[in-house]
View 1 (cartoon, rainbow, N blue to C red):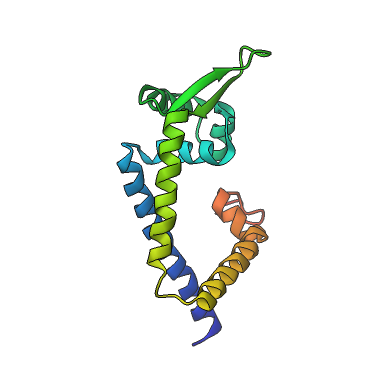
View 2 (view 1 turned 90 degrees about the vertical axis):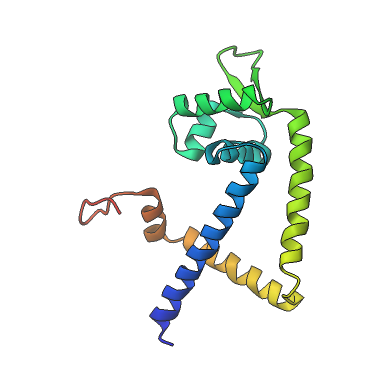
Length: 163
């Protein structure tokens, strides 16, 4: 097969895998009665710890007012807490509720087992090859200004069009 065709097929396959993973993630969010944006906030809080609304807004590229509304609903469900900074009363940090965090840790442990079971047909050598190849692709994409500008929707310097 021609190189360009192989490369194109790799990206088509990645798109399918990404779609499948996104669908799986949305199903997991439903287990907790979460929408996709709520689940994304929960994911960031779990990964990074306490964050300010502005931090979440920047990470998700959504306005602070929208994030604030989503956090309100998460707080109503008892999933997150708002904590005022004692030194700067205007600063509010969002954190996962301790009880919910424990529930989430158990869920993640179950997911890891499930993913591991999914890959039982793959040998250790094949698993390592997949991992190395995906990490290599990740680094290629991370270092590609063309790919990153397309993701961010930046303007092409030559045409002035948004990619």
